[in-house]
Image (tube, rainbow, N blue to C red; front, top):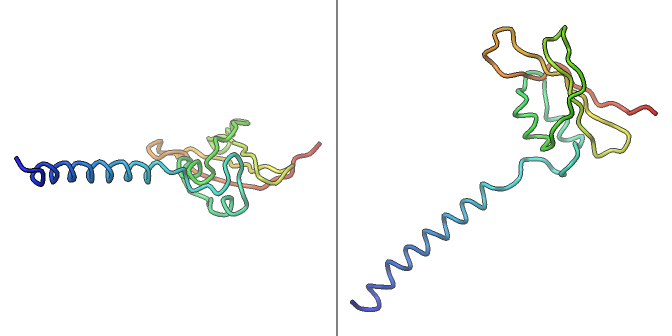
Length: 115
């Protein structure tokens, strides 16, 4: 077997591995959040009534803190820390009547912490 015949398959395998590793690196990038650990005004503006919680979590890229159940809306209220000191984002999630769809945004607000 000549060197050329041996190098071609090795080069093809090496190229395939490089593409596979490069593909993993591209898909393993963080969510769309601009800043880790807090919610910006831009991220807040991207969230709208009717969005499912999974999409909100992807936009904010931080877990919300469960605050209280909202029996009237059939859902719950979650708070998210903002990048602006002394403020937080509050979102009321509502459970659908049918129970087949996931919880979605019912109301949202940018609040100032008191005290």
